[in-house]
Image (tube, rainbow, N blue to C red; front, side, top):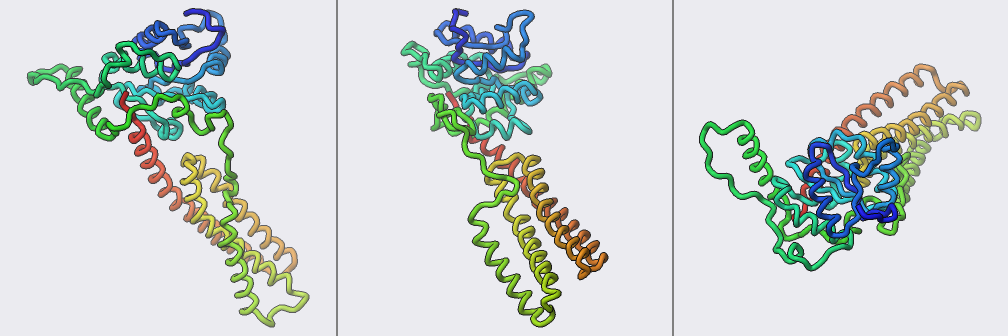
Length: 360
C-alpha cells in the first residue's frame, strides 16, 4: 500500500471466513486510490489492539462485511463503540443471508445497509464503486456508468433429485434471500453520502445529548404528577378532617407523602417503559435502569414508613405489610412491562433492519 501518512479512507472489519471476498474488494479499492486498512496490515510483533484503535481513529469510516459469524465477534463491538464515539460513518455490508442479533441488532438495525448476497463476488464492481464514492474517490469509469444490478442471482436450473447437500443448501439460501429481498425498497438506492452512515452522534462529531434515564423524568411529567399530588393531599385532608391534632399532624403528612410516592411509582410503571422504548434503549439496559428508578421510589417509601416507626405512630406490622404489598406490585408490574417491551423492541429492531437494507 502506498504511504498515506497513516490516514485511511476506509477501515475494514470482517471475519476470517470472508477473507477472500474482502481481499478482492480491498485490492480493487486500492487500485482506485482508496486508502484501506484491514488486519493484513498489522506488522508482526505489534500490539494489535492499539494498532486497530489507532487505525480506526485515523480512518474516515468503518466498513463491516457482515456475515453470520459477526454476531459472535466481541472485537466488532469494540470497533463499533470507537466508531460511534468518534462520529465515524459505519457502512454495514450484508454478505450472507443473516441479520444482526442481540447487541448488534440494537447497534446496527437503524443504519443504512448495503446488500450484496447471495453472490457477493458477482457484485464486487458495484460494491467497490459505491465504497469509492463514499470515500470521495469515485470516477466516471465503466463501473460508474453501468446500470445498477438487481443483486439477485439467476434462477437455478432444474436439478435431479440426487442434488448434493451443498447444492440443496445453496438453493435454500437463495430462496430465503429472495424472501428477505422483498423487504428491500427497490426504489431507494444505497445513499452515497458518508454522513448518511453516521450513527447516534451528529455528523459534526458532537454526540447527541443524552437524556436522563435514572429517573427518566421529563418536564411534561409534572403536568400529570402535580395535579395527582394535589388531589391525593386534598382527599386525605377531607377524609381525615378532625382526626389529627397538632401533635399528630406529622402522621398525616407522612401518609400523604406515602400515597404520593405510590402514585408516582404507578405512573412510572406505566410511563417509564414506554419512554425507554421510544429512546430505543436495549431491553436489558432499560430493565436495569427501570429497576434502579423503581428502587428509588421504593426506598423513599420505606424511609417514610421507618420514620413512622421511629415516631411511634406506625406499627411494625404495617411496615412489613407495606414492604410485601409494594414489593410484589413492583415485581409484577416490572415483569409485565418488560415482557411487552422485549417483544415490541425486538420486532421494531427487525423491521428497522429490513427497511434499511439498500441495493447498490
